[in-house]
Each structure stands twice: as C-alpha cells, then as structure tokens.
Image (tube, rainbow, N blue to C red):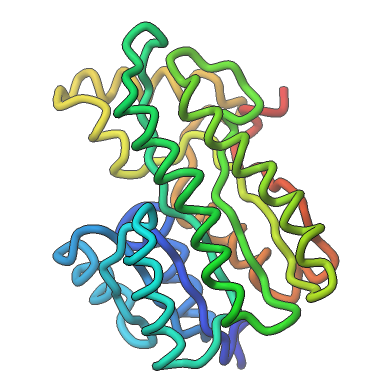
Length: 250
C-alpha cells in the first residue's frame, strides 16, 4: 500500500532531533525521500541512521544564506524538485526583558524569522505548483508567557508569513500553513539549564498550563505535519493548526 507521500521529495530543516527528526522519520515511512538539515554533522549522521533509507543529511545553518544556497543547489542537482518543505529549524530561549541583549535578539530573529523566510524563498524555484510548505510556529504567538517576548515575537512573524505567503503563492496553488505546538518533550528543554532539577521544574511549569495534563510528543507534531504535507489537507491554506493539548485554546 502506497504511503501518503509516496514519490515526494521533502525537506525538513532542523531535522536532527526532536520535532524535526520525528517528522522526517514519518515522512520517510510514508514514502518520501527526505532531506534533513542541522548545524552539527555528528547529530545529523545519527538522525539519518535512525531514519534508515530515503534520507540525505546536509549540514546547513538556516540563518546563513550561503548555506541555504548550497543546500538547494544540492537538492536541485540530486532530485530536481522539492514537493514539501517543513521549515522547522528554530531556537527557543526565555529571557527576562531586562536581560535581553542585542546579540540574543539578533540570534533569535536570524534563526526563527530570517531562516524561515529565506528557506521558503530559496525553495520556491524547485517546487512544482500545488506543493506544500509547513512553518513551525508556537502557541506562544498568541499567549503572554513570561520571559518570552523575543521568542514569541518571532513566532508571531512566522504565523504572519503563512497568511501573506498563501496570498503571494495563490496562483501556483502552493499551500502554506503553520503548525503551532504547545509544550513538547524534546531535547530543547535541556538547553534551558544544566541542572536536572530545574529542567524538571521548567517542564512541570509548562505542563501546568496544558488542559490535557501532559507534554506532547514529537511524533504528535509529525503526524500534524504529515497531514498538512499530504493530499488529506488539499483545501487547507493559510491556516494555523494548534497541537498544544489545549494550552492556547482555553
């Protein structure tokens, strides 16, 4: 039985761990050939091995335009087209407003906003009409969580991209949608602090705002991405799909 993405060529940025890896695994399982990117080659190699066949790992930083040029030149040479793009790469750090630095601001916007915009722009020449672009947003774009002003602003920009790009690409019937996860059990929480007890406290704090009473799993986001990548969502464009356990809904 053919998979939902049989014969498709897909790109998942930030595909070496967490949501990106889970999504790439599912895309490959459903018949796609998947390119994954990340900044650390060793992590990419591990991810590619876990996916198995139908995968190519390419080291690339989405905030670097030369890296993106090299990535898409490789895809063009090897496959000639790109049917699905999941612009997933991003960073999430929470900093009190009085501790925000220019460097932190620029790093966050460069990855989460600049990286998403130019990933899409540079992918478009390879995409056939009717392709699917999925942007990874966040529930923080509509909630006022503490210490999240910069991160939340970047995800609000991502949500806006889905609307404006849908209009820009309407003549090509390319669907652009956003997935907005709530708290998801990924390695990113380990970057918030080196203290395991504090990591548990952070996770407990996030879980407390989720009506379903737990954090989500990366494959739950992957399943939503598969839906938006496949023909199952053929009449959905410019939308925001919350996969958040209700955190942003009540």
